[in-house]
Image (cartoon, rainbow, N blue to C red; front, side, top):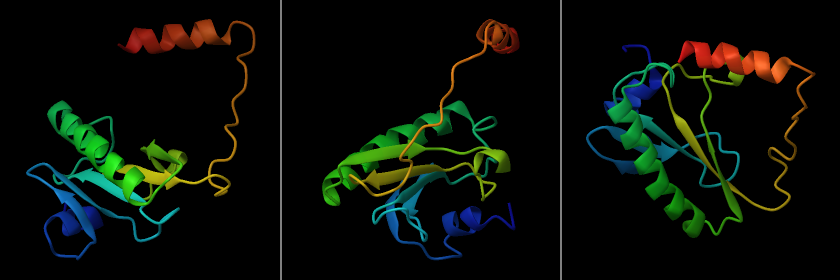
Length: 136
């Protein structure tokens, strides 16, 4: 995609702090990291979201992410690591090219300190389950 910044990075038109590259996947340091070592992993081919990525390319991204995550975790001596992926603006996706965040975490770093979960009201879990299963 001509106007996609991640496609331009994958084509070598824009420089990056490259961590890993193979035929399908590119990984580089995020320029606005949550913590030092925050890394992006993405397919070289353009896909907008997780909903459309080719399964073989997704598998390559996940396997590369695992390998890179181990290097990040050890390399920056992190206490933990988040593996995040956002789809669409409502979920925080800012670049319309599917990508995965590997974020090294440290005790008391202030990022995602709480998960705002809630219980389902009576009957809502069952009706939600039916809607999802019907789409499979």
